[in-house]
Length: 187
Image (cartoon, rainbow, N blue to C red; front, top):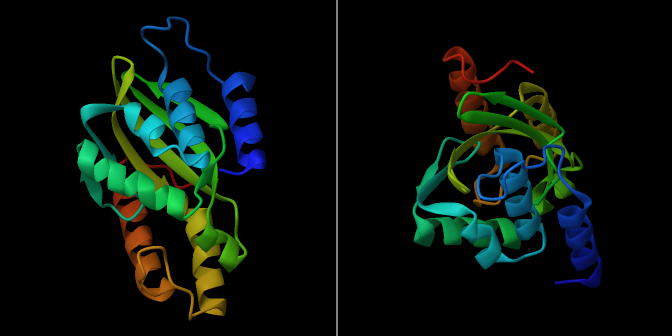
């Protein structure tokens, strides 16, 4: 981990979150997810993984569901390898037991395309103080930026290794399906 990453992570963690937990034994989703993403940004896979419930899961922006600690570890390792940096949630909307967080995300791939940061929305359900589920999607405006950048750099490959032009339609299809189901907003 670089010195700059360490400093930024410490600043992030101790700088607070837009939503501060009133009860340390039952923290709000924004505080937990922001801390989990800070651990990812710092390259600390074990710390990031510790925020998930044992049977927790993540649904990525392409609709792929990753469940359980072993598979989540592999996913988070991929995020660290891709140098995923997710800012604190800029918008928090709580709807019952679900929290909807908007954040900016940067990564090697987005940097290479010249589009960092892009906006991601995380729909989070908590199980006490642990993340039960994260369902993430890119906003339509972010997908439009990705599509334009991929059209300009058709040789670009996504972190999965898929060509940009083949991967972006899956991301768009997933976001569109969430919008059609009334789960996601148009922007």
